[in-house]
Image (cartoon, rainbow, N blue to C red):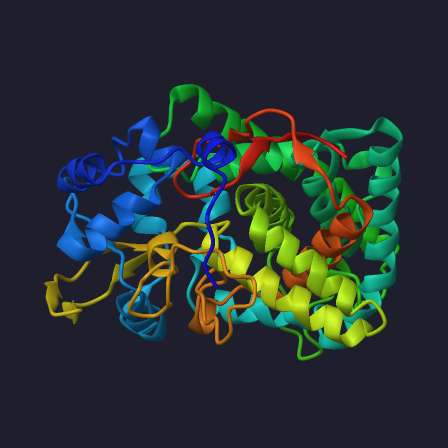
Length: 434
């Protein structure tokens, strides 16, 4: 499925980059020195790297991987490639910093046995039935946001819609009272923003302060939940507190830091999924028209509509991956894609590049909402595949589908503002009218 883009709106959303410029950035590629035009549109550079130097050694000695097959090989070999970040984060944050303590205790940056224990507890509250039970509440939440937008005649796709959904869903999972959720987004942006390759002193200070403020809040929440436990089948915090029936429980540090992880991980990436999708439909109007026509044809078949939206959500995830970068450390000398890596090698997995690899995807630079067999890596792969992927897909399907049905003619009223980050790709603002 191919099409012609609208040149004016497309350029305003994703500025084009010449082949010469992409090659020039690729030739001197350094995650610590990224120009603004790369942050606006990294994909031509990723393509140049895949063709020219798919396993590139960076100036700091780390390795940057851009081919789909190479990422899958690393994901599969958890025995060789560690997710533990103590070696990497000690010099970045300092071992006594709140950011170091948080990121080295969170689920995503750990190996078994901590990873296994925490993931098992979380997955016990994210069963297929539990997620299905969340759908009616999610529909009510989305419709209430759409009612407010309709009354205003528009708003901001991020602030008024995309970011409001995951904060509520994760807040419900952890049982955060509604009147206490306001600071969560700011804390999340600051803590995840500190994962960028380069930090300003201000960003680092804000990240450390946000961890401390979040911990202070969570201590009170945990103390209350210990006295008034919820249903461990649906309440993740109660489940984390109580641990397994076998007696395997988390320490207080593990518990609190993984609560922060859950609030952050479920928020930023899902906000980006919904925001990126609705902005991409402005950039690819033929795809928007196709999707709306398809949903209209299936209006009397809820199951068919659900499948259409599920396929579309996976394509949005592939095309504009919410999380563009992952990291691993080689525990022993090894080889990836024909390149020898030494023991201790730090490896950056470029998910955004792998998800547009022509060796895996036909016409990868085209948004194709009917794309089948879409084995993207937006949720990772292997033992560290995102624990909340089913919940994220549900949020995306309900939010995008109901938004399109309510506002089929929505249009951006100004160029959206990118987040300006390499690791997390999304928007800070996207003003629109209904």
